[in-house]
View (cartoon, helix red, strand yellow):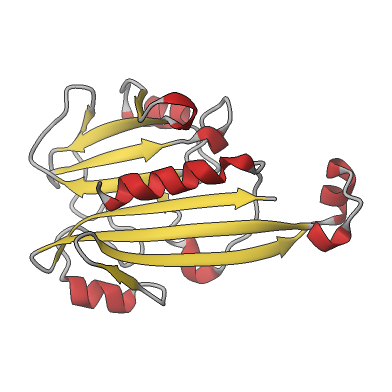
Length: 203
């Protein structure tokens, strides 16, 4: 099973928690948006409005099925997946995006013609030399044989006074948001041929 599908399953398991927003360390902030669409803030419908209509389809089955839309970028020969999750709510907030190098265009994907630099996210870009890219990414980086590389970031942000009042929090020891960020890099012959960024904020 590809790593980006396995990580999607992991994030769906975390859907037992409530979706919220929180701050993020600056070292990861530049990886949390692509083409102006930001994780946990942009809705899939907004992406459709700006990039053109592409049908929402679901990856997986049952309650953990992931709603997503995709576009094929003819310039970069890549497919972009914009994915929500059970944590994305009824408005289907963007929870992750995946870029995969491919010459195939799926029937259900919209068509884009972007510039060669449009798909760069932080230090990530298709075609980059894997050893160079992994040195520039936030550290530490974990190598997973047969899949690629993974950076995991975890942080907490204390509740504001307004958060405490709005959520009627009585136990201040649990009055914080937990933020999880995953940056995955896929490789082929020592070249970056895909990457995925996911973010989940929970209480």
